[in-house]
Image 1 (cartoon, rainbow, N blue to C red):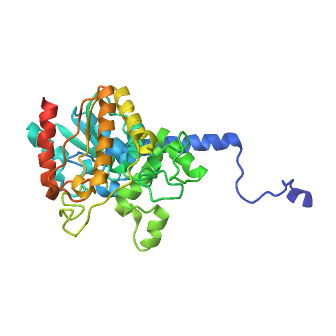
Image 2: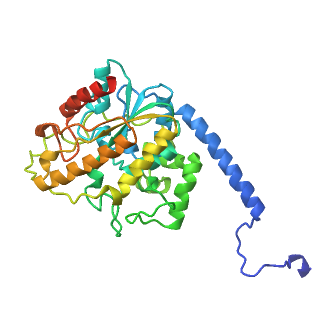
Image 3: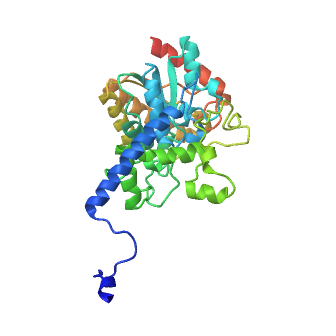
Length: 361
């Protein structure tokens, strides 16, 4: 009788369900297919119709699922893309006073879209366009280069110590060494998988758009008496029409001149990323027009101004050799800057006028 209850057991086995490798692969494929279908259904339920002068909402700055959707939506319109960091996004300008909005006024129609990414240094922009904006093909692109990212070894991500990074998931994970980027092997593998299987970006989209940036477990702990189902309204955050930061001239708070230790082009990681970004855009059949700066030279020590202008000369030489149309504008009047690299609304208006003359000519 006891033989009925006697079973052969494996050493060190547990009470959990044991599945074979084949069953594991089938389960993974099933979950992947369910995720793809769920993502497609979600896109239909979650309406996205960019308004005039639209820019990525600040709280969705790290939501590359949404940026890819934005690229596909705008790419079908035939409008020109303005790509860059917070200079293009408009850190100190209302949505209706960014560079793209002023260019639209100069053109007399909605011809330009704001594809700026807050904190988008060249290494991040390279990853953003390469992996999360594949729809950007056969379009006119205005690419902004902010040389502030070459102002120090820290900005250029050359420091060996761990630093606070913008958009680490957009950086090269295995192909290039970034001294300032430290991540575990699991994290890097997860980033690479998400680039090839965009459905893996969907959970982050839900977190940023509906759960205030928290994952589901953390959100339920912070909101023990609320159901997360009620937060999924299928209504995306609206881009803030108001200012992200107070629009004041850079010298209003007594800021003094600075002397950044500029990085040479030949050793700069950010510059190499910019070169690769240009090649990615050109390789997809886009026509690229580059605008460099204008940086706030009024905020630099005289010796630093000369080093900065030397960099400008080297950049101009490279653009000329590559036969890339470009514009290196002179500095704006001092009161039109909010800091080292961001103009105020009137500064964008002045810059847009000069840029439109170049583009239309």
